[in-house]
Image 1 (spheres, rainbow, N blue to C red):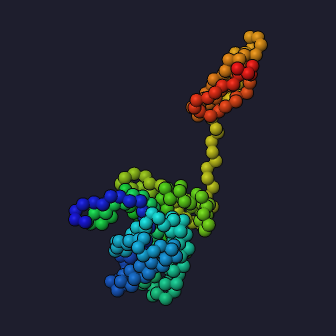
Image 2 (tube, helix red, strand yellow):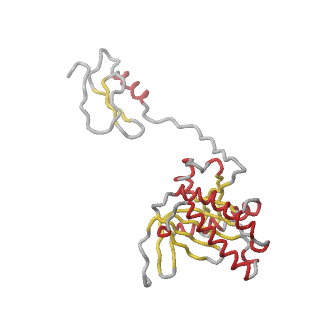
Image 3 (cartoon, rainbow, N blue to C red):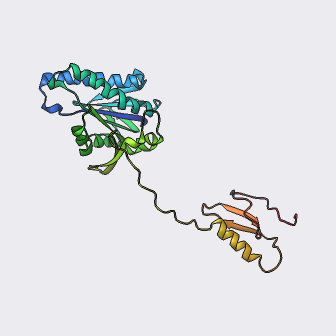
Length: 265
C-alpha cells in the first residue's frame, strides 16, 4: 500500500470498548483482551458475517471492526443488542472479579479509507466520539447489564426507526455528545425507558391550494356563461394543473398536456 490512501468504501463501523481497563493488572488485561476478542467474534458470527467480510483493528482496550457494506445493518445491530450481552454474561460467570468485562458498544456507518497507518474517515472519528461520550459512560455505570449500546444518527434514521425484528425504536433515546468537532447526536439503547417522539407542530397552509385556484376560476367565469378558456394554476409543489373555467381541477401532473374543453374542441 505504501504511503498512498485507498479509495473510500462504504462500511459499517462497530466499536467495542472495555470499562475500567486501565485499572487492571497486566495479567488481568491480557485475560480481558482474550475475552473481548472472543465476544467480538461471537457477535459477528451471530450476525452471519463471514470472516472475509470484516476486519478488526486493535486499540488496546477497544476493538474497531469494519464490516463490508453488503452485510445488512439490522443483522449487526440485533447481534450487538442480543449476542454481545449474552456472551458477556457467560464469560463473566467464569471470570474472577478482576477480569470481569463490561463494554460500551457503538454502531455507525460511512465512507472509510485506509493508508499505511490504518483506517481513516469522518465517520470513524464520529464513532469514537460517541464511544467516548459522557452519556454512554454514565449509562454503563448505571446499568446492571454487562454492555450498553449507542447508534449514530444515520443508523437510527436508516435502520432503527423502521422497527426491524428485534429492534424496537421506542427503546432508543437521543443524546448529544460534545466533541472537538462540535455537537454530535447519538441514540442510546435502554429497554427500561420508552422514547416518546415530540408531537409535530402545526402544518402551515400551502400557498396556491386547489380551493384557492378553483375560486379564481369561478371569479373569471362569473361575468356570464361558462368559460371555455382553460384555467392554469400552480400547486404548492411547483407542478401545474389544467382545468376549464369553474370546472374542478382535471390534471395535477406536471409536463406537456393536451387540454380538452367542455364544448368538445
